[in-house]
Length: 105
Image (cartoon, rainbow, N blue to C red; front, top):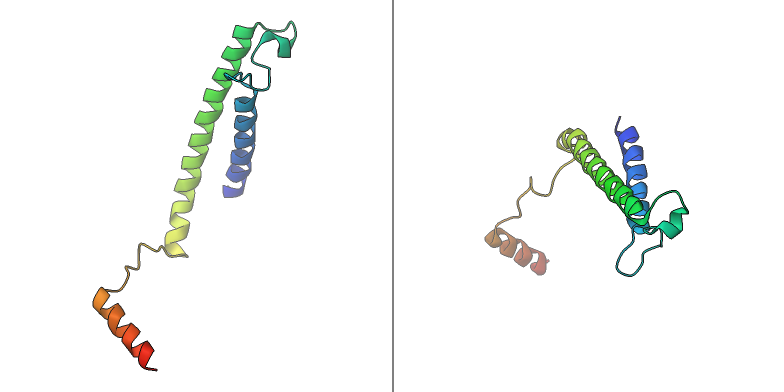
């Protein structure tokens, strides 16, 4: 299940990167944000609306997949692995006495 979600998440991320790069920015982007890139298929405004909506859908899907992966893998780290937050650092006094004993040897 996790592998399927990871692969899907990867493809959604690639699609999101592509759609963002295709949008017309102040500098012109890749040039598909106007009607020149799409030929006579859509107007400039229609292309911009399509790219904006597809960006919103892909971003939502990306976030949902990220949350699902986080929830699925939440139990994996508690059972098999450990977190650095589970083991607090030693107190300053204990650290100083350890350093003194190491320096003597």
